[in-house]
Length: 455
Image (tube, rainbow, N blue to C red; front, side, top):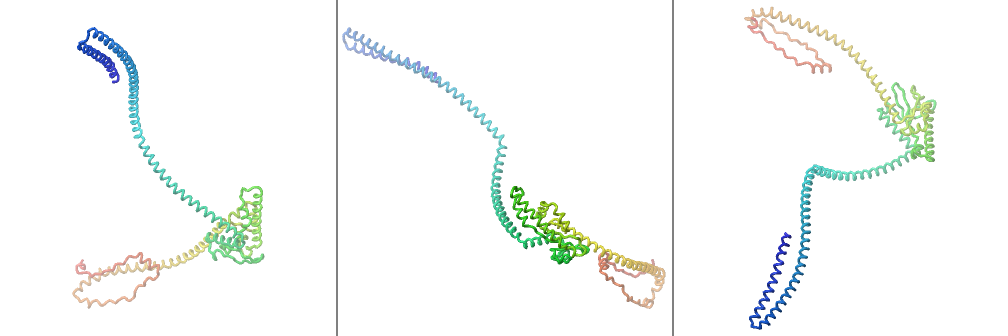
C-alpha cells in the first residue's frame, strides 16, 4: 500500500509542474494580447513583447530551477520516505511474524498448560487435602503444644512438691523414733500383703524370755506345728542418706567421701546384726528355727550394704540373723501362708475321712432296712396276686349265683384299718423325695358289671 502511494506521487508531481508552467504562459499571452489590443506601436509592442517573453522565460527558467530544486528535494525526500517505508514494512512484517509466532506459541502454551492442569488436577486435589491436613495438624500441634506446656508446668510443680516432700521425709527419717515407726509400718504392710492375719498367723510386740534376757521383737510369725519365727525391723538410714546425695560417678574427694559413708552404712548394718544375734529370741520360743529375721524396709538399703561389703550376708548367717528386704520377706511369708493352708487342708481331710466312714456305716444299716422292705413288698405283691386270683376264680363265680339275694344280708360291714404308715422326717430324705418322686395316681376301683362277670 505504501509502494502504490509513492508511485502516484511520482506521476502527479510532473503534472503539477506542467500545469504551473502552462498557467504562467497563459498569463503572459493574455498580457501581450491585451497590450496589442490597446493600439500601441508594433515595434514597441514587439519590444515589449520580447522583453516580456524574456522576463517570462527568465521567470520560467527561475521557476524551473526552483521547481527542479524542489523536485530534487522532493525526490530525495521521497527516496528517504521509500527507504523508511521499506524499513517500516520490513519491521512490520517482522512484527507481524513475531506476533503470529507469539500468538501460536501462546496458544500452544495455553493448550499445554490446560493439559498440564488437567493432568495436575488430582495432584492439586491431593495438595488441597494435604493443605487441609497440614492445617489440622498445625491446629492440633498448637493445642498439644499448649497441653504439653501445661503438663510441663504441672510436672515442674509436682517435682517441686515432690522435692519438698522428699526433703521433709528425709528430715523426718533422720529421727530414730520416726524410722522405727516407718519400719514397723512397712513390716505390717508386707505381712498383710502375704495374706497373714494378726493374732492368728502373727503377733506384734510379743514378749520373749530366754537365758539371754527378756526381749520384745517387733513381730512373731507363727508356723504350723507350734513353731515361731521372730522378726525385728531395723532402719540404718543416716549414712546411706548422706551417701545417696553424692553421685555414683563422683571422683576425687567426693568419691572418697561417698565410700566412707557407705562403709559407715555397712558398720550400722553389722551393729544391728550383732544386736539381734545377741538377743537370741529363738531360745525363748520353744522348738523354733534358730534364727531371727532382720527386716530392712528398703531394697536399696540392703543392696548398697551388700555392694559395699559382699561378705555381710555370710556374717549375718553366722550370727543366725537373716537380712530380709520387703521382697524376700514377702516370699518367706507367702510360703508360711501356703503351709498354713496345707495344714488346714490336712485337718479338713481328716474330718472328711471320719465323716465318710461314719456315713458308710449308716448306709450299711439303711441297706439292711431297704432289703427287708424289698422282701416285704415282694411278699405283699405275691399275696395281692393270690387275692386277685382267688377273687376271680372262686369268689366271683359263687357271687354271681347270689345275685338274687340281698347283699346286705350276705356280706357284713368291713372293719376299718386304724394303723397308719410312718412318715419320713429326715431332712435329706424328704428333700430327695420331693425332687425325684412323681405324684402317685389315685387307684380307682370299679365293680364288675354282669357282662364283665360273664366274660
